[in-house]
Image (tube, rainbow over all chains, first blue to last red; front, top):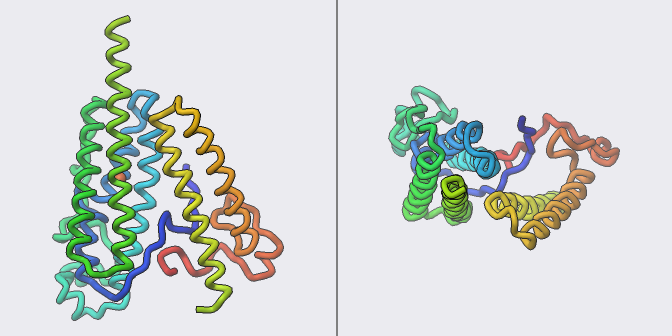
Length: 189
Length: 89
Ligand SMILES: [Fe+2]
């Protein structure tokens, strides 16, 4: 089970109302390589992987949920004071008529989240390679968002998230090595 | 900004930093289970975060319902269902 803690993993501040930036951030909220996809992907894998890598999947999945909360906080803060006109101008007109000021699990192009973003191949090495790719893609997306954002407060939090994707990718690559080692040991003895 | 608010912010930031060290070392020890030095650092980090959490919660009230609200926090009007929630800060 999980116990809710009333704090963010890392502080989130924004300089100004900026619905366009919020729209870009939706890629990391409900997109294919976003935080929701990451959290659900690892959470689902942990049940059937070899014992040695359960911890890393369990703990990274948990961290991804705290990233999801950070992204939601960013989107909320960037859009809460926006007028309908500002939302339309930022390309969030379709979002607004469907959801008002609510958040929604969709990507930057208004495509709703789907479970088909997540693979489960019953092969831990194949699944871990997907995880590594997902982390690298999330890292790249954070970089592109930072490149088009001039909100210095927000960029600080985005750089933190970008660095976390690097660390997760590294931990997954180590997990692959752990599994390969185990597999080779079984072959020889 | 009012000074009481600023004090709370500063302690929250300290807690976020201390908790983050635990998160980071937990992931590291997940894939380096035999690294004694890392395991020692990890145990120290948990102690430190727990100390700061206790400091924060005794002053400002529980952050989760795994902690007991102190008299001080209750008297100051702490309630679970009160603002600000994390996204409102
Ligand atoms: Fe990640």
